[in-house]
Amino acid sequence: MTTKPMKKRAEPSESAKARILAAAEPVFAEWGFDAATVRKISEAAGVPVALINYHFGSKEGLYRAIFETRAPTIMDQRIAGLRLARAEPDLDRRIDLVVKALIYPMFSLRGESPSADFGRIIVREMSDPQSEARGIFRDMFDPVADMLTAAIAECFPDWTVKEVHWAYHTMLGAMTILMTDNGRMARLSNGEVQSDDWEEAALHMCAILVAGLKHRDRSQTRGV
Amino acid sequence: MTTKPMKKRAEPSESAKARILAAAEPVFAEWGFDAATVRKISEAAGVPVALINYHFGSKEGLYRAIFETRAPTIMDQRIAGLRLARAEPDLDRRIDLVVKALIYPMFSLRGESPSADFGRIIVREMSDPQSEARGIFRDMFDPVADMLTAAIAECFPDWTVKEVHWAYHTMLGAMTILMTDNGRMARLSNGEVQSDDWEEAALHMCAILVAGLKHRDRSQTRGV
DNA sequence: ACGGGTATTGAACAGCCGTTCAAGATTATT
DNA sequence: AATAATCTTGAACGGCTGTTCAATACCCGT
Image 1 (cartoon, rainbow over the protein chains, first blue to last red):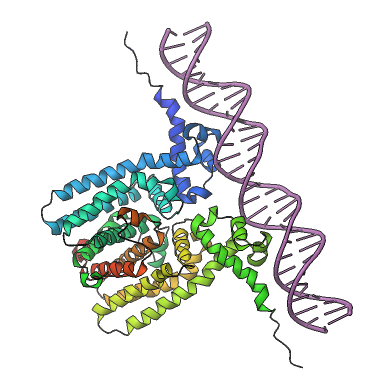
Image 2 (tube, rainbow over the protein chains, first blue to last red; image 1 turned 135 degrees about the vertical axis):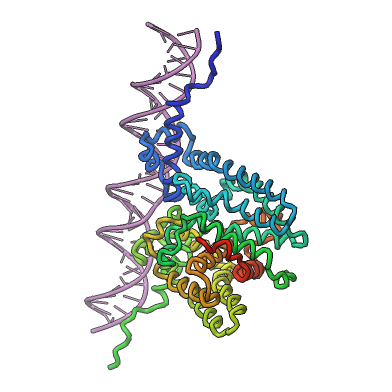
């Protein structure tokens, strides 16, 4: 007599939970954590409100579950990119790989229709002072951020700690605005620039950022 | 008989209104438009809730009033900076002035204690999809954004429209993250980088961005 | 076929939301 | 001094918030 796996049947039980998770993403992205309501989410998922609290404990539990689902994928891609970068002995070419290890995993989110929303959620969480209390970034994103700054420091051995971190945050900010954009780029450029064409965005931004790191005028920031 | 000006006496009547306006800024900055409540604001201002609707019509009216108070100052400073840049005939040095015309008026907000909040409000409005409906950016910020992209285009006459706009948004994004930061920079750098030291931030970011524009590898973005 | 744990449901909860209202206080004009 | 206009106040409004609860439906191992 073969003992079957003790796990409950996966299909029907997790289907509702997964449906809630999927429905929550665009709602949080569009409205933000506070303006998003559990009723909007439950209606989008086609389930009664109570089911959200049953499966995720609270609204914030559901919010956190989205990050726990999505973040590891991005972090793994970044770590993989950094591994490739470290294999490149020429530091001038390595920094190019480091920048792309930061940017590409996030930009590729814009492509896939369902997870473009997660990029917006990240940005809104980043610009929310309350996020420090939630600690999502500290738990899920900071470790890889440390790896990235370390990789930058390796590419420019003579840089100060400050220079490394300002470089990192300059890149991070440039990356951020792409996830933020709601059509303003297209409006300002009369439709020439489409912010959801992430491949074009990555090319332009990486070209500027890599050149900026390589050629920055360090004499201006020597004293500070 | 000289007819006196019909305007009501300014001092006492506007004092409560001004107090509300001042109290609203930090509340909107900390909580965002939706999580900020008129009661939080009225308590901070020391006035009854009803007074907010009396003076500003609605919560959104108060929100918009903040922008109408603060935005013109920043825009005027940017326009003045662009005027200085246009007086510089050497294009290589002019781009430096253009970048600073964009960044410095905003960064200086971080310095003055009361208006550091406005920077945060801007970022949260920028990352809110609902902002397109409000149209605040379209009305108050886009005109100067057009002037800035035009100034960039003048510095690099052979650039395509796309290249100009990606350059602008790369700079805009880098600038944005500084207003966003709630202490994460300090945490990641073990206290070495303080994001509210806006003068240091401006030096580092301008150095990277100007170098990035000057030395970007355009061969990578030629085809797109 | 039956018992037991899990999943689902609809209704209800107290609490807060932005806004409104009528009444009173204050200021300006005649 | 009397009247009109503006400002301020406290209480109340209906509506929506996240969460809880008891009751029901479902599926599994036996």
